[in-house]
Length: 142
Length: 142
DNA sequence: GTTTACCTTTACGTAAACGTCAATACATGA
DNA sequence: TCATGTATTGACGTTTACGTAAAGGTAAAC
Image: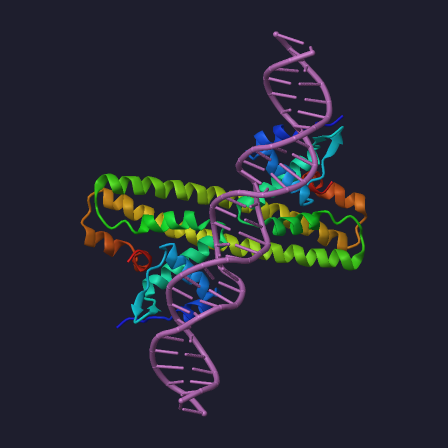
């Protein structure tokens, strides 16, 4: 038989509270089985939970995550339904990749500033540092 | 003299409402000059606004963004202060890069599913598709 | 001069994503 | 059997990030 988990085991593993997991259940994101009145989570629930939390970390709302999980849940093979799913899937991918561009730009800018701070540390005169680093930073920092 | 903008010009350009920009001012994220009682925004404000909105798009809270902008605002050259700033800056970068790993993983998984849908479209029998695509997807989708 | 079109402040409203009791059930070890 | 620990279901509270009137100032257009 395959492995199962209790709510607090998963909560501890993923660093969230049981309340959070129950909330996701209320929202229909996970659907654990029951042992009496206690919830028991199978590996599917665990995987979905991991997916939800990763989605949350990258800034998606639960509504977004719900939609993406629903994409996976497409069970039937109806052609039109599958085509719609594929479309939504591609839209989501486009959003994710646009977000990655934003993320890269943010990383670039912050690491530029980081290098400026490191140079400064070395005791270089201020105007030389200014010459070395572009004007993009100053436009934000004044 | 350098260019300036009104609140609604910036709102329109960045696709937010004036209310949002005023809110950011309340939070101390932008500090426009005044012409009488009307706000006038310089290029510094504009750049900061762009930074804020990009940070928002990648999932940071305004508190996070405030902290990052404060890093830039370091004006004095006190050594200990600068070292602390550099540390925070590196912490932020680590967070951003960890977030990018999450994002990449999400993109990978979603594009895998996308390819599965495309294969299915081609009319391949179901069990062949299952063989072709790994078990990772099924663990979420059942 | 008054309508139109913006701007302003103040203040209460709201949706999302949980936190935090409170009251209760159930198993288990002392 | 009684306490301890963990589970449950409501139900209300909280924070974030603005939305949405309400009530008014100012300046150009008609």
